[in-house]
Figure 1 (cartoon, rainbow, N blue to C red):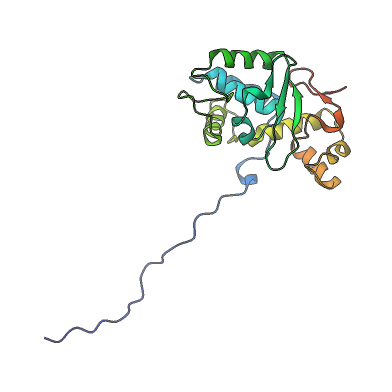
Figure 2 (figure 1 turned 180 degrees about the horizontal axis):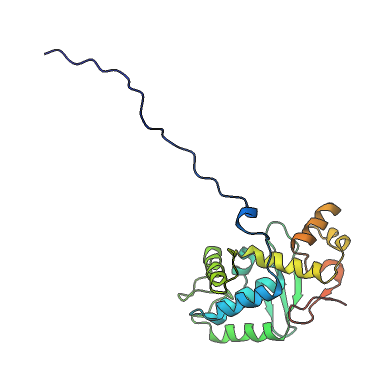
Length: 219
């Protein structure tokens, strides 16, 4: 019996190998920062979680000090100076380390966290099993809190860092002061940072200190 001749057939379907593209941030939300009132709502929503005090404290500390998620979850107790009420901040991405003051409500939050932490750890924010909190876990918690707070848009952790810079700019810290910070280059970049709410570090020119609920004021 003769073998049938085979021939190449053009496929009837198109194999798509291109993955869907993520839409631009502008299509998802109108801005990349939170207002002070929105941060309060986020904290109140986080308080209702199983570990409400820890979660609300993470939001508070990230906002007050303009921390990235990686800087927040890596925060350790030896960076918290209870005696002088100061926080020794270690930056990632070649940022400049600095010392930030800690105000009363935040200091009380740290003391309660340390008192209630079980099992004890060198890290400030830990899971139920005592492992350091992860950036992914923090992102999920912030997103869920944003939904619970009914902010109307998807919230991500870096918006807390932007909110810190937005609060600085909103309180009148000029862009030329921001320009002198090592993290920013030209003046037009500093202006964009101020407008969009990026972080101006607390020790810029030694003039920024805590006052009020967020605590920003000139000396």
